[in-house]
Image (tube, rainbow, N blue to C red; front, top):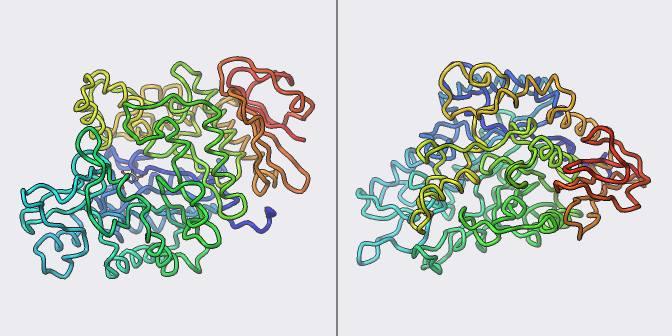
Length: 552
Ligand code: NOJ
């Protein structure tokens, strides 16, 4: 494959925006669409060609917009449809596409479809959601646990039935078996295509197909079985998705990226590429490297660099000939990567540069999450009440149930809470980091006086300027776009190294994940250093957390 015959989205960089936390232009404390428009030049300077907006549709915000009450409108908290159209137009002037988040596994319980569906068992939308009778003793139909904790079933008095929700009770699952439901969802996606969006990120898509028979799963210690273990990626799911592709995606110059926790590298060929349903798939093996057996926050396991290299390389291999890989270390559901992949006490500026070097030189489309390019870090608030994230509350309750003390449980919340990624963007050292003149919906990270865009802009050695150097390097080297990936030093526990080769040209990325100096093997030493995160680079060694790009 040459760089020339790749599609636009294979050659670009995607920037993920959590609009609620990006820029507030009204003083409401909540970011908005005009705030995104305001910073388009910042993104253009970063080399961004597409923005993935997390949901901006009307929503009661139980799960910050992933509970949608109208699929074809803009939430007034974020602005108007005119603001959205203006964003598309302004982005377009800068060569940037807007990518929407489709949340089609579930809607909000305030969506008119659900309000109708719950009225009785005979209404027009009676089977748009998944309803079942109680067991004879009145308990839920199965022992399934929702992903945010507690039973995945909630009783509805009006219908005298339970409804299923893979996530919170305010997020009832839509019934994809019903063709009218599928068509309504496809119509919604087509609505946004007509507005000129450049693609879609498709949320929680592995849960849309439920098992033919509803029966109990193997219970965990709380007596419940995670819906994830029971029905993620169930046989038959791809039929729905091929229909989705045919009725929505085909024939448009867009990209699609599905969120697919549980699709294994060997299954990728059915999901992406020529015979697949999406262009790319976010899989979780590297970001969940500490959770090989399910994501209970209090049970993280020790992992080694070789484990991380292995899972990343497996995904690279699986998409080498067919399909394409979305490279990411952060999103709005994960802690900040400098905390997630490095031990406490690590110099987070150096750590951010290490990850950036991988992100921007690996094969695939890099996805940068807002603030990652500035080296944002986790927060640690004193009480669970300070946390907004519904997932953090669920995990906290689970930990208490399992006998952890409040302070121990809080430590895991500090480490893994999704709010770590959701604190407001830090634009400057002004009030509220320049995010809002009002009271931010979530507190700003205390480090904003030293970690912010304005300050980093002026510092040639900042994380932001390191990103820019890498972006420039990427733009000038076709091998970084279309070149083959090969893992080097697979057994080395300190250095993550790989090569990218195209038409006889090779670049090598070598980063030191450890806090020790490490000697480089002889064949790295005679190569030309193109970029280095440390000044005064020594050809023979990598300093702690040093990142280097070599040629040859
Ligand atoms: C994945 C989204 O990224 C996450 O934020 C959300 O809570 C769940 N899906 C449910 O929609």
